Image 1 (cartoon, rainbow, N blue to C red):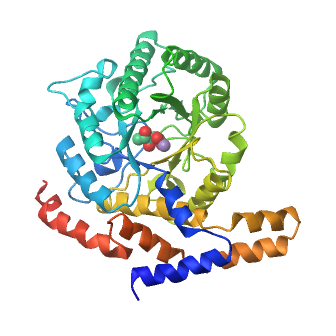
Image 2 (cartoon, rainbow, N blue to C red):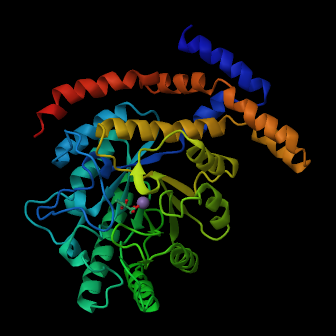
Image 3 (cartoon, rainbow, N blue to C red):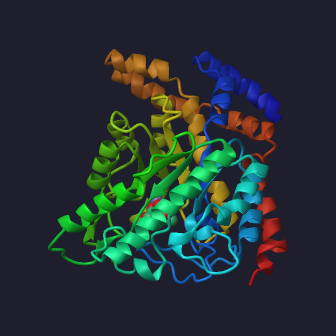
Length: 416
Ligand SMILES: C[C@H](O)[C@H](O)[C@@H](O)C(=O)CO
Ligand SMILES: [Mn+2]
């Protein structure tokens, strides 16, 4: 049976339960997924002075072929992008700048990202941004919450400089860049004064976002965390801290799937914060026992995240980003698997007969609700996915893997 024939059968089956597959695919096109650049090189970046990855995060594995230069990373992204259907954005860290010599973090400028903007224009990508508050000698003890004013000021300047770059992205590309602030500040062991670093962080963030920037071009977001490696006992930017900060300062809030206690899920937090924040940034990731940043699966939680976005029609208020860095498998495959899974979850959510489910729920008919929820899992959504891939000239099924393998032989294996 051809993809077209399978699709026609699936289309009818979904129509029978009141779901329009054409509309679902159309809506999927309007939901870009922001692919994180850092999966391509194990969060190393391209600063001339770069050292080890710090900040309590880790990319474990030693799979050959990681990108060593911006040109290589862009070539890898070109391949990944050609294997992922629909709208995409690229999420860049400040450490992925391009310059002749060493550029200090507080001196990063839009010109250092011109090549990325040109690439984004050529590929019709939007860009998002992140100041880099780790992997730097001045981040060893703390950044925006440091008790030393000079160090704090250095990082405040970095944040301000990054906002200019983010605004530049938005202006050049005609789509707002979401700039996410995540800092690793915390403590390995018992902390007597937990209040002072948090107060300093409030003031530092206020200083960074003091200048108003048109939200047409740039949005500020803040990301909390539970703990980092070597920072197990105290995190300055905790969940409560940033929920309070984002709601009081009207910034976007970032929820990272790996940044909560193991039994907490961000899918349940989306509806809890949306009445209070205008914009939400998601870092879709997969924690395994800790914030291990494994590749996103098409699992229950990814599906639940997608369901929340679609059921509540948060199309323009939720920004879907990915955040994983697995160095133990082919890095391009990691991007393709994780991003396709996010998009599959969104498509499945768009194919849900939500109206019937809501009706059952409103009637307190929980039997029907459960029956419909379970039966729809075996509806032929995959035939719609294949059609979506075909319309976007992207391989169906696992056919994309052959191209990644070919590239591995021809290109990645040549990298030392
Ligand atoms: C590299 C990213 O900024 C980083 O993963 C951050 O978003 C995070 O989640 C830290 O744990
Ligand atoms: Mn994150």
